[in-house]
Image 1: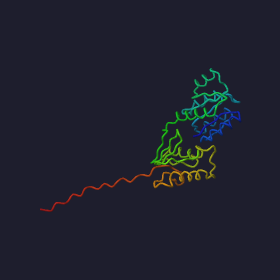
Image 2: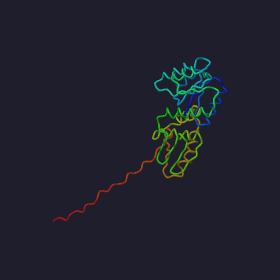
Image 3: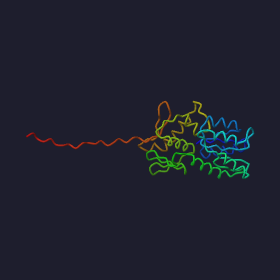
Image 4: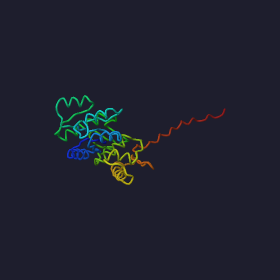
Length: 240
């Protein structure tokens, strides 16, 4: 999942970026309101963390522009403006949550996960064949075996399972999971797909991750052959 952090203080932006990346999220950082508005026009984010005290405009103006879109991401305001009037105004203008600085990162992460669950129409329990992903607890089980995945491996697998049966290009996977743009040269997706296959496919007869030639990858359970139905043989009666 991809999160936009709108924060002009570099120290706080770096702290948030590192912490959220370690939690498995892809992060973009906008240092001002104009950049934030442009980012939200160019990219579909799963969540925006928004400071109100920006150098070029009030964060509420950014919130207004985000909310002006037909389908905007949830917004968590993170601001030093902690008066009751500020919190009420932020929530009344369309923010989904409001936290004040200073803050505990563990609480911020809990609120981020709650907002992402609320805004995510897909179920928390994803299944393809005998592979099950619990997005809430970040657990992966195939058959009866629990599989340990690194954060980026989990991010790719979750993204693929939310789009099961749909071919995903390397560009789509990188832009969704990594904090970078695909430049056409990196083989990072292929490397991680090999890691995933070694953990969830290699030991099993039914392969779930498929290469789509000329496009990228797809996850899908193999179709089971339908049993052949034989009509009963009716003995022919002897001619009289």
